[in-house]
Image (cartoon, rainbow over all chains, first blue to last red; front, side, top):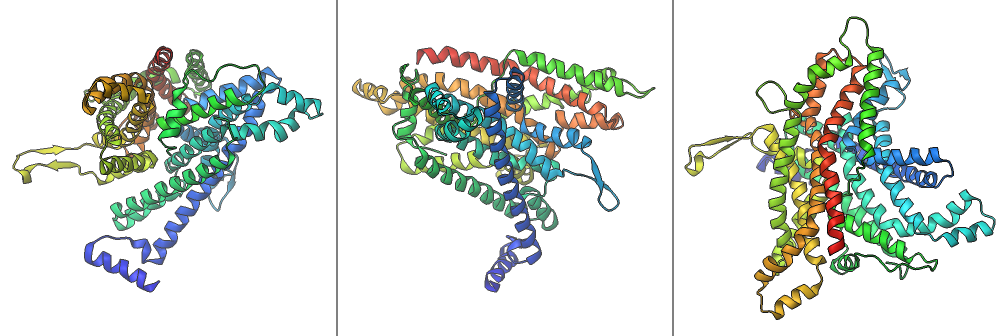
Length: 246
Length: 315
């Protein structure tokens, strides 16, 4: 480990390439923290968007007209406005109305910037997920639904046990696209100062003037994450593919 | 992100969809969902779905925000409508004599699309080259820029690109200044380039192989086949996603405000500051921002949807 650190220290002294986090504990911890926050942000908004999509798709088939129109309006709104503006709106406008508590001398909202990033990104991707799940649900034939009803399933139960599992397999490729898109969109959380990878990298290059090196790290991190996600989802897609369908 | 040539062309070959059936099977709809997902994957983005009634909603939002601000305005301060009227020219065009604010958004989107399209078309054609290194190299470049977040690309260009290009070392007495907005143009044109490249490649490989074979039987060379037979047919398929990409790009230009480019979001914030950061004015100013972006993007997005319908019948 020492050798490794020494190599990069010497690299800096000899060539000027300053990968400082590889030989200084403080910067190493900082970048690790950034990666951790980024990963948390991605996983949290991913899960939240899936939950939103699951509930939204169910609500779209509700009997009440008001609920159906509400969901349709929500999808239209989040699909057609830029995610960056959505994040700013959630953080600056809705953030003003959240009750605050005393955080040692200053007022802090109960939902911090990380929370708002998860909520706004979750709703952004959730709008797409709702539509994706709905298209999958529409692919389930009416007679399957009727069969479930004949077996005594309630609407909710048949949704959970019969329709959704089928629909999910149908819409997995579309879902895959959307989740990759969400992963790339999470960088916008930088705009409201969530201490994620981008933000941390910015801090490090401000302190050490090693912009190029940190940019390389950023690219490796994000392209790597996308590659891992795409690879994993692709594998899953293949194994979940309904034989003979499309 | 790719599923390979076979699957794509398979997915795109039956544009009319599977034949309708009365049988209670998943097949037709499920195949359609899958096809949609694969097309979306090829184009690298979702299609904007603007509808006529959105005009009403944007107008309602604007008026509501204004009325709410009017009610919350303290005595003696200017109301929201006067404030918007006062600052609208600033947000739209920036200070007198300079093209900034919203017009800079348009300039950035226009040039980024121009550069992105030219570079992307070249890259896309390289992706269907017969030479393996060219094909692999362009594939790598495409995938790299497609899969990196826009903000990271924008940061890279904004911070690493020189603020001026000195041509003295090569014997020309000229220093080209590169202002912030021009760097933003380059930053935005990179992801556009990669995605257009994929659109071009997808369009070329989506054509039935019979086109290539019949051209060959008529003794066309590869270059002639490409320029006279394949590409003219591709243009039709590429135009709707291309316009859609322009809309996405125009919608994305506000993120340049993070880097301090003086475009509409930056100027909206400055205008709000100048009015003393009154909280009741924030929603109306952002609603105004939303409205001008919407007014610009709406007709273009509608046009793309119409073209799509027009072209879909004839493929």
